[in-house]
Amino acid sequence: MADANELLRRCQRSDESALGLLIELLGSRVFRLAFRVLGDASQADEASADVFVKVWSKCGQWRQDSSALTWIFRVAYRTIVDERRRSKFRFRPSTDEIADTRPTPDEVASERETQERNSRQLQQALSQLTADERGLVHLHYFEGLSLSEIGEIVGATRDALKMRLARTRDKLRELLTQLDTNEKAITKTRKNGNTKDAS
Amino acid sequence: MSQESTKCETVQSLKMEGHAESLLPAAKIVVDKHLSECEACRTLAEWDARFTTDLRNVSWPAPSASLANSVREKVSQRHRRFWLSGFASAALVLVAVALVAIQPSRELTVVEVHRDGPTAVAADDFRELAGLFQPPPVDSLDVLSLQQNGYVAALNRMGKE
Image (cartoon, rainbow over all chains, first blue to last red):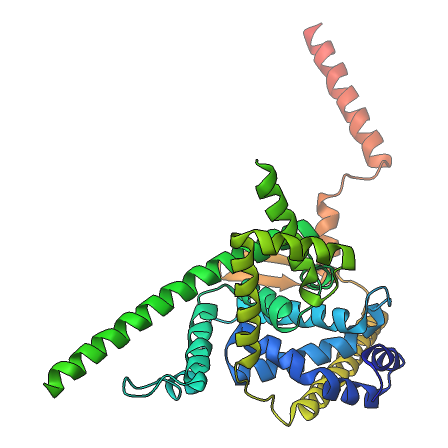
């Protein structure tokens, strides 16, 4: 499959088949960013579609001074964050992912359980962040983009970005520690309750 | 600010840059050396690594299979809207031009207020009516009027005498 740069160049020449290939190539990455920020699959779907419509209508503005991926992520980030600001929808992590993975006190703490607990706590912690912060976390930690790429996407200077990332990381660490402490306390209480019931 | 904390900040900054494995070998050596010596920075680095793994392990819902179709539909809607608004604007301009071209010459209409209520007066009547309020043309009447005034003044003078 052609790379994003080539596909975007073809889009600039009004080649609609290139848009289809671009969606195939980057659709799930744009969707993940949207889902991370919006927290709802159907909204993320809608936002992803809007992103590619904008990519199609504004591709003429891509001057090839940044990579197509960075440019598309910039369009995506703005569209998604604007969508989030416009909508009254409040971020909520997918309950399916959380409810189904809640371990019972009797279960042995396997590696999978630990991973699921981490995932659940992570979702909860992320839900406490702002849309911008969630977007940053996704681009930095999940996508592994460089600071200059993220700077171009979110429209921030390197120094400002470093500060925002450091602040967001501190906030996340604090939230995760708090969630972990709470969960341990709940598990301990449940265990004590079960021991008393058994005796 | 101590030299150590400055070093920590620099390394943290480099670590952020190096998240995408974009660190130069020399910078990587500096970072690794500092991490082996500084526990606080090591803890942060470990947290970063663990968080990245956890975040990438989170299960994701898949985007809808109809994403491409939905985009195509929206794109064609936009095209339709674009052409429709173009045609609508052109039609409006044409209508405006046509209206200006076929508009009848402006006729004045005054409203005469009667006791029974306002009544529209035809333009011809208005012209007549307006004529009454025009200053009289300078013609023989004016001359006569001036003469009359002169006679009156002369008679007055004679009467006094």
